[in-house]
Length: 236
Image 1 (cartoon, rainbow, N blue to C red):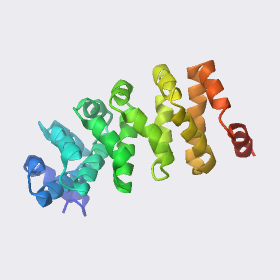
Image 2: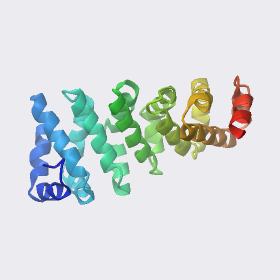
Image 3: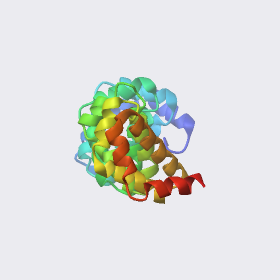
Image 4: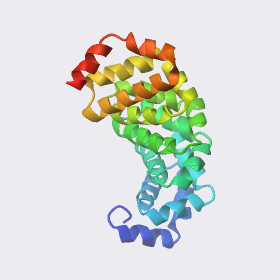
């Protein structure tokens, strides 16, 4: 019902279904857990329901619980998708980042998940990164390394590069990412093989990295094989 009609999503939430559903997140019945999480995901699509979900004491904690320990792949993927949905509201971004295990679990799904799971994870991380106070947790919980590694995965490379571009606004992060040769290598590689938007994001990230990272970073980027040729090709 929550999947097919906007009005249904509103009626289900108003009828008190949210607490009844999220209590099933710890169920040992994999069908019950998966269906309950999927229902919450569908309910969250309705904007007014996002606040109702976040205001339910313990609901966010249990969404993250399913993301980390869900009994099925689909349950874990839907937990990531639910965080992506909820993180569309600015007021909730920091709450999600601060929830124990949330960022680390999203980073893990980005690195090891199915194609769909990776997509949900990278979009959730992208949303969370738009909050100005999120970057330190992103760095400490492995999200930055996961995003840098995702640059070689064509499924999520475009979004990962876009997320890294946001991170370049912080001097410490620019230097940290630039210190990893893999990140620079992957960004240059994306300039060669990525979609037009992915190439744009890769160039923007490298530009900000050089601007904020100092002379050493500029030299590291400039010495990458094919870099100059790629710049000329893109300009043409």
